[in-house]
Amino acid sequence: MPELIDRFGRQHTYLRISVTDRCNLRCLYCMPEEGMVFMEQDKLLSYSQIIEVASTAAKLGIRKFRITGGEPLVRPGLEELVAGLSALPGVDDISLTTNGLLLAPQAAKLKQAGLKRVNISLDTMDATRFKFIARRGDLNKVWEGIEAAVEAGLTPIKLNCVLLKGVNEDEIGRFLKLAMEQPLHVRFIEYMPIGHDDAGWRDHYLPLSTVLEEAKRLGYELEQAEGPKGSGPSENWRIAGGVGTFGLIHPISEHFCKSCNRLRLTADGHIKPCLYWVDELNVRPSLGSPEAMEQLFLKAMAIKPENHEMGALLAGETQSHVPTVRRMSQIGG
Image (cartoon, rainbow, N blue to C red; front, side, top):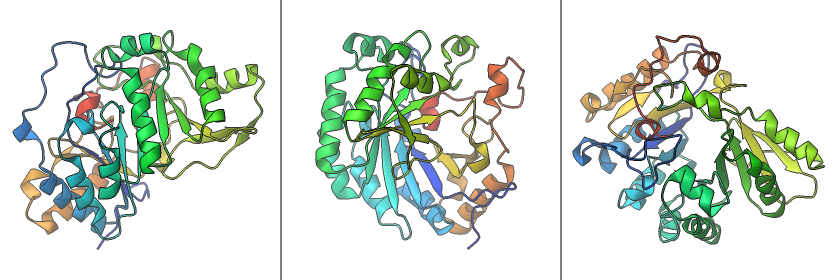
């Protein structure tokens, strides 16, 4: 079968799968606190339909699946999907991105079903600030989820911290200390303008050069490090003598589009060649036909843009060709 290679020579081996747009948090950079209208459940792809799409993807060279949401663990029976994906020939990595609140009671059964590792969102280590950023939830539950993931062997464990100017940049030192003292991979992520209809996100945007500047101010000696499995576009560092690592993911200031190897499957059944582009392809008419599904993936390769141009939006340039038509929770963050 043909491989998934786009017009710019990039081979695609990675599919992110959103299983729901629902979430048990209302993080200020993702969705409004009140008034959310979520998809009707019958609009979501069933697990068997997702596995059918993933089966074609695997035959075309996809080797890595990441399950996302919304918050994927709010959808019941997720281990059924994990087991189905892990049974596909050629697949060597299945991971999960979660806020961790519901992870503790599910970690062991997800591992048993075939889940390899987890990314856990953790934007702050302060309980009061957690309530401000997430607008609900309990930080203690997140720590319980991290501990359960360690116990279940869902490693390497990555902690995703979205840096927000004026909100949590004063905690960079605490996260660096965590990466030095614990066998965790802390990933600092630039705030992206996804799910916003205005330019207010610019006020909270913080380039990740700030992290290296803070490490230098604290007197840390840094060593470039090899990233953990699935580190993707992360620029990885280790504090000399530390047991963990930290990474920088800067999709705006130093975008990694040239090496992009991923596609996204939305919860309601659309393939998105690029997270920040309007183009998406409906998989439902191709269900039941492996040949049609194959052609749909090849079409995604044909229309994938060279880059997302979020940097232009940061600079205030107009972009009529890249409207934000979905919330982050709908496309699988």
